[in-house]
Amino acid sequence: MAANISRIQPSVNISTGIVLSTLGPTAALVGNDSTTDSPNNSAFQANVEKIMIMVIIISIMLGMGCVTEVSQLRENLRRPWGILIALLTQFFITPLVGFVLIVATKMETLYAIGTIIMASCPGGVFSNNFSYLTFGDVSLSVCLTTCSSVFAIAGLPMTLALYGRAWVDGNGAISVPFKDIGLSLIMIIVPAAVGILIRWKLPRPANVIEKICQVIGSLGLVAWIIMKSVLSSEIFIAPYQTYVIAAVLPVVSFSIGFLFSTLFRLPADKRRSVAIETGCQNVGLALAVIAISFEGHAYLNKIQTVPILYGLFMVSFAVISIATYRLFLWKQKSTCDDSRDDEDALIDDDRKLVPNPDNINNTYGSVVNDPKSPADLDVLPVESKERSD
Image (tube, rainbow, N blue to C red; front, side, top):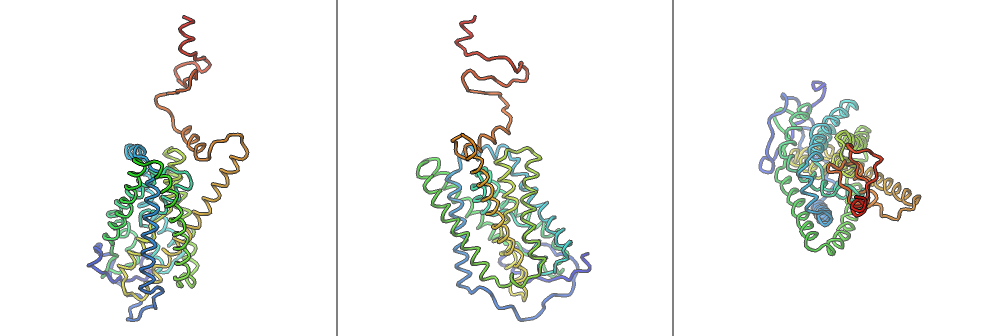
């Protein structure tokens, strides 16, 4: 298959990113001319977009930190099954799915490069916000985003070297912007740590800060989607394969994350967090990789088409799923006499899925579910036992 696909040589900026090992044999270049497509965004627009992304990330991570308990973080790190599952699905399965979709749809070379880069990126901070809105495990979501960003230092070059060799010319290589990855880690860890500290020391103000950050992050996210749709004119003339892959890949990634976490019998809230983390790739990092590796190339905008479309479809699918899920919870609540909040009921349901290793039940006069004792024995209060003796 690789022999029938034309290849492209990226223009690598060595001072900005670290170059990967040479990929594939030398082949004819694509778009080897001095002219470039007229840019969609001016320098001012690019700076505005960067500021928007920074505000969105800091707001979301600060808000997520304000609802995260230290004990929850410690528990997720002590039992890292969710983290391991997310790393497996993000860096091994999702890139493979992207590669299969490219081959199945016979996608053009330029769009295929953007697809592989997009599928190889770690999870983004949008997953934390979506996990919160679906009553997922927010502390696990923060751990997943941080760990996947750290693992991307090694995982991203590995997946690009494995799957990118079919389309990249041997005289060049795809550059990984480690500087941008480090900056992303700082913007993830620092606001989240500040939020956790506020939650620990000032619980009541933390609730107010969380709500404010939630509004800022959500409005910023909507504004970013609108701006990318308006400014990225390339997406309106892209072939149908780009739309198919950009729409299918996040759905498949969500499903894979949920399937694997279900197979490992994670609680329901953790399953939602793992699924969302797997399906919400870091679009900003993908665009940075492309911009650095193919700087000044005639078809830079085309290579960025799939990541932009992926971001739009990913957010749209997540918003529709969240709205549907919360509507389902609201209807379930309205049909029962239980006056508990949706979140409390959901947490209780999740706890039922987790076996109690100590068989502890603090309810006065309740029956302890001990498999060694008969199920029909009545457990009397302590005072009653003493009287009977």
